[in-house]
Image 1 (cartoon, each protein chain N blue to C red):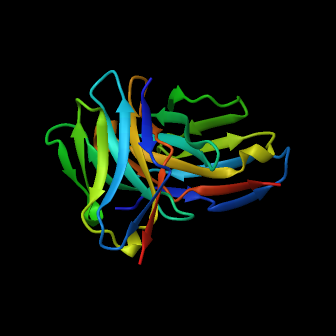
Image 2: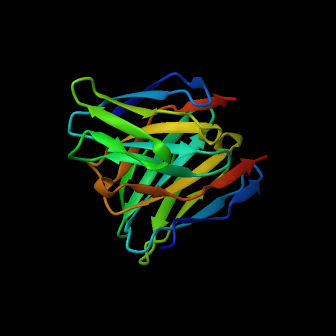
Image 3: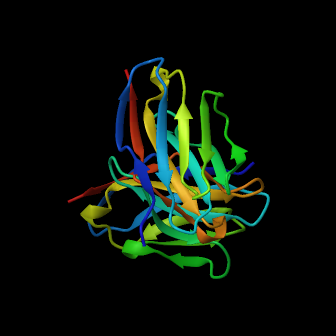
Amino acid sequence: AQSVTQLGSHVSVSEGALVLLRCNYSSSVPPYLFWYVQYPNQGLQLLLKYTTGATLVKGINGFEAEFKKSETSFHLTKPSAHMSDAAEYFCAVSEEEYGNKLVFGAGTILRVKS
Amino acid sequence: KAGVTQTPRYLIKTRGQQVTLSCSPISGHRSVSWYQQTPGQGLQFLFEYFSETQRNKGNFPGRFSGRQFSNSRSEMNVSTLELGDSALYLCASSLTGFHGYTFGSGTRLTVV
């Protein structure tokens, strides 16, 4: 079974600083990988996804992630944090042996300090 | 195009009651999957339906059930509610995993 590990349940950065949220996965097959963001009392919004092709994936709101097969990682970055980036972020892997299913990491709460 | 619609947004139920939640997927999407989100357990997969058939089920008791209709709308039902069932229930609509998953805003269920 696939699994996802997000290092750091809470990350705090200053406004304008680099954002780095870490995600490692385990999968026996080439994975589909996703990053979602969740604001309080809302659903999950897709930031970006990796399926095939280019390993550096660009998403919405200036976020990007790089798929590194050798490290089984899919870390999320943003060059300059904005106050509006404060939210919870989830990394997920798609497991499709028996239908469509996402396996999520535990989430990372991003705090942006002014 | 319209997104994923979940109704109701909020529910308060009493222990022992049952509840039905609804999810209308994006037009053309035949896969609907359900997830439970709690502070302690995070996001956990409940089940997935495709063309009215349940293809996959998570590790939840039989009190949790679902179905999908011919128009791809899905419902999930929880019977004999327990306090621990209080959670945000999210549904996701997809073509395939390759195309990604679009989530609704969720239903916040509170069991008292």
